[in-house]
Image (cartoon, rainbow, N blue to C red; front, side, top):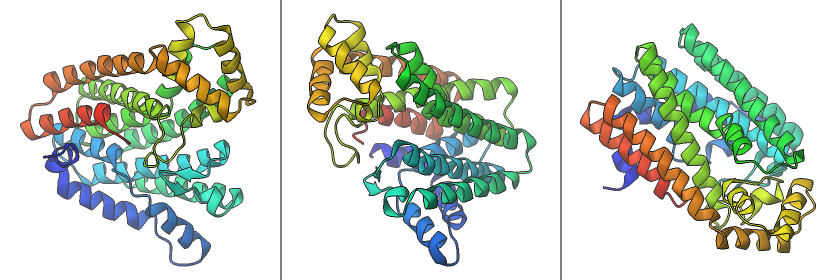
Length: 325
């Protein structure tokens, strides 16, 4: 059995119910809004975040309507943030598909992102759970703060691994953390159990982002972005940060500054990518992933009792490390 089938096995019906509810939430009767929402629905994706929430809820008692509305609310919030991020980053693609701003324009993308965000708040309000509502609202603030931190870091000449983790803890990791925390809350877990689940989600999210960052050093049409795309956007990620901080090449430091200044050209990016590969950047990032995966496995061994859920979450961790896109 492949990873994804094993991951979905304990919550297959729950996941189908989620997808139906999510698609209903991204549906409008007619006009331009209907067309844009249909465009966004076509992305689909593997639903890794809602799957995590459903599995966490199942671990602590079971998936309920509260879990489902929470999962839809969180995934809608994430979707809205991606639509807005593509405007900020001037991205033309998202998961191999033309972005909303590229297909329509920035005005449409911002307004549709606002519509989806409002729908997220409506869905999470249907949980009737004040704690979950507050958590999701705080998540929205965290994601926005993370995006602003990333933008301000582009202007920061310091090349810091610490700042790298600060950014991803407020972006990708915050989403995974919220899935695990809210999933456990929706099933009535204790405060201690919620905190453990929350830390598990954060570690999983950090792993997920590191794997995404490694992808940027290899060309793949499946990933939906060209090699060095992060550098084009002014971002220095973990592999190149390690290579720069553990070697003494002034020419590469100069190129890194050009990344941050937004003045680097494709040929120079190719040089910096190759330098990263030759100076242990990829190996270091993979090592850090393994360290975070061990923390995840410690949680699974100590806090997950049901075998099917334990097997699914173990496969989830393995999949994050091994995935190809």
